[in-house]
Image (cartoon, rainbow, N blue to C red; front, side):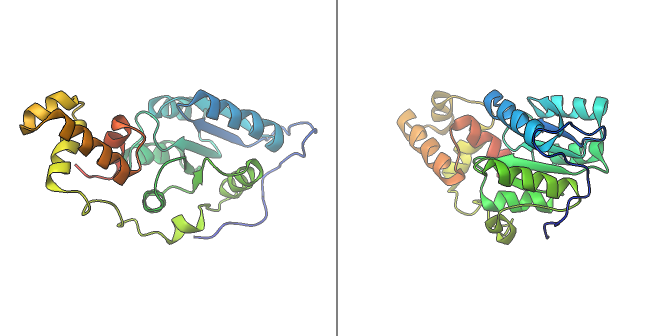
Length: 223
């Protein structure tokens, strides 16, 4: 995969009027601050017409009503987002326009898997604003964009084999939305033991909390 060079769509310089054929972008992210900040910057600096969504279902509805977009940018961990199903639905609805993912937590291997599933890009939320705008322009003009580490990662390098049988037992019940107390009762162990397993799972999956553990486990097909 290679990034393209020259942009073929009509972009405006900051401070000039938006052209009638401004490219259309859909940003779907459940974090209001992230979504609004991206929208404000890209609309002003890039001359882009932007729609917003807070979850996958909302994004799909926006595509049905206003698509296809020149680019659909989906938050990797927002409600409803899965690989490959969520991405595939967005790709089908937005065809022939591209779909890319944005994330602040997903691993390089997960980013590689997203590209293998058809995403046109994988953009870290830590990107500098100018770099993000450049990446979006590249994808809109037919290219792809992802950090070098993601491009070189092996999508098979997921933590399946690093989980113990007991961690898999706990993970399965986390994905059923069971509490630590309920899981401890199911497995006939102390609740403090379950807390330790949840902490270990969070570390292994690079997850923020137990809900994020369950989301990533589903995306990685760990259960």
